[in-house]
Image (cartoon, rainbow, N blue to C red):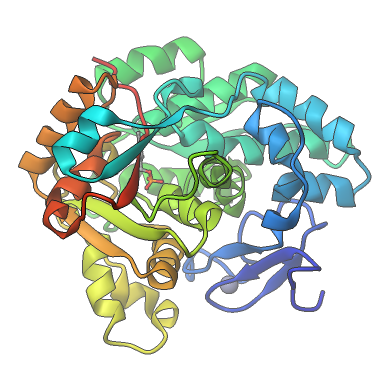
Length: 407
Ligand SMILES: Cc1ncc(COP(=O)(O)O)c(C=O)c1O
Ligand SMILES: [Zn+2]
């Protein structure tokens, strides 16, 4: 195809510029990505914001015609009704999540603080949104006869993403392999076991390459034919598709756009999608813990080169011994750093590093305000505490309580 343009939606690799038409199936990764050269990232090029909204309380239907999987299915002969029916099968219980000004938190911070509450989402976090568009693409491909056998889905995760993946896969009876680290929290493993995926515990062995051993095993499974059911954009670009609904929900809320959003960053898909959904008029502040801040370090390094995406391996390097009570954002690399960096640059935001004390304080504040949220899920609020002195009382800032507390 030629270059995708807003009128001709498609995919473009942020690194090498390779393109894919929207109608091409299974465009999980850049065609030039390989085991030796994994540093590629397909990004959606579209005019999503111009598409009409459907009148539905399910965000995956409401914003359906904007979604890449839906447009792919339409380009291959399915109708809007077919796409809505598939959505009901995979994600019929997704709803637009609550968004409101919080009086308790606003008073504590000294600004107008708006809270998006994802703790009641399917499988208890925002991860189900990212995964839904991959599974919907697959179900649409089955409907169209492009898949006649089901290769297993594969995911590497120790928590919310694994639960979300196993939950969605179980709904359509799709086999799934979950690669988990040794130190998985029992609160998750019990629930995960109940959902019945094939679970592989990945130990770190002497002589292993650097990085997460679960991720290495996940990649090996994908190389052997599994489908990357991943919440990392470079592994499967379709996880960056429906994740945007979080931003669109806020953008379409009658409360109006906030001035800024403070969002917790682990692998970075979440912030990347929120940034795309909200657009550049909302400052993107990407919050990491002081015990694991590879994005803040990369941001410094970006300032030293003219074209950072061409220097991926030097800019985004694994953090040594990540640690924080916010254990869902301990990814040693911000895999989706490019999308978050673009959002920070376009909006005039930047990285924020929160102390452990601020992460704990944010969680106590969020719980006092009535949110049953994990330390990971309230870590964006810790970023607000870290920058409280820069805020004026009239500033309108948003945070997302992204995951329920399991204990
Ligand atoms: C509740 C919750 N919030 C936020 C994140 C961070 O999302 P991302 O890894 O896409 O940056 C995670 C990741 O595990 C999470 O579980
Ligand atoms: Zn590429």
